[in-house]
Image 1: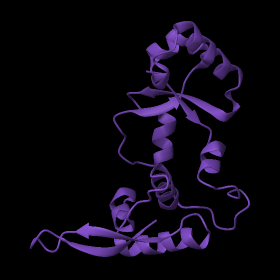
Image 2: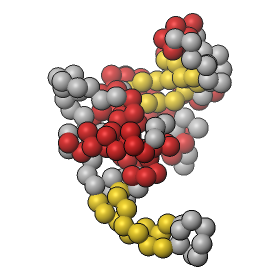
Image 3: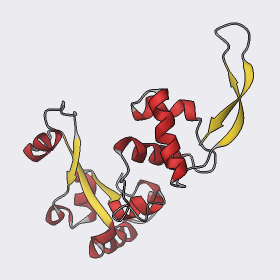
Image 4: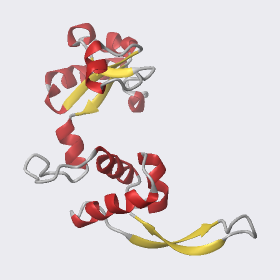
Length: 172
């Protein structure tokens, strides 16, 4: 599961790739899913309900071997710097107004759609806000040049009557 996309590779090749990953951990975070959040997580969340499982940094000495890492369920994540670069965020440390969590989540969801984009009206429930507030979130992202709007023709339901109608809506 660790190198799921590389299932067809020989075990020796997987072990060699894992050794290379461990030699250059700077751009990667090696994480492990745990059932119980740590006390540090509890303090950082300030009383929010604890999730069923969280990710925490894996103990590298416990997963030096590829098979041991696979048994522990280790996940490889890009560092925050690489994630920011993939989202087009090169000036986060120097910017006057850092991105909010909702803005970052919007960028992540939009980036996952690649060139297809996503309907603007579909994003508010996915990022945990209402449509009115989301308009201003999208507007700030547009102003910073992080997203673009494109009019698209979409089929929408017309209050339950008929088969639906075609309507121009916005995709970002």
